[in-house]
Length: 148
Image (cartoon, rainbow, N blue to C red; front, side):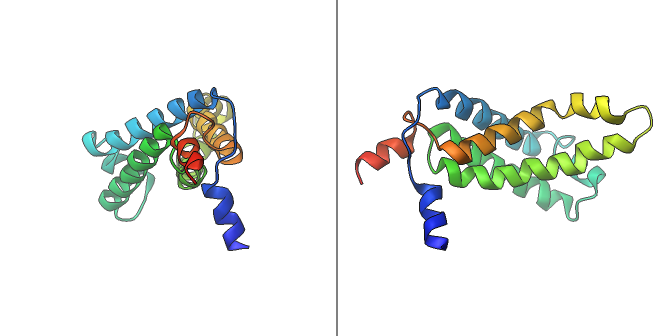
């Protein structure tokens, strides 16, 4: 069972080259957000402190490193399905910790949260898409599959 799951996650399935556009958008957003967690304390340590994460310095940099690494791998199209999973966990956690609480804040509510969560929701959908279809024909996964 685990072998079948792992095989699915690292396998390549032919797909249109247009998947590259989804990989570029998703990879660049995660790459830049990961870098911001290092260079801007308001996007990293201070934000993680305000949210209430334990050990915010470690957590912000750990998440930032994951976002940078996985974002780069998405841009390359290497292990696309596999690297989309931790990013899906990151974006789901971001929605749960930063967007859902907006529902219960004065002067915010549902429409404010929906507007504020649009990028997070788009990233969530893109990651689910990439898990289902893989990196496409213009991915390093496709090149490596030709040599196997």
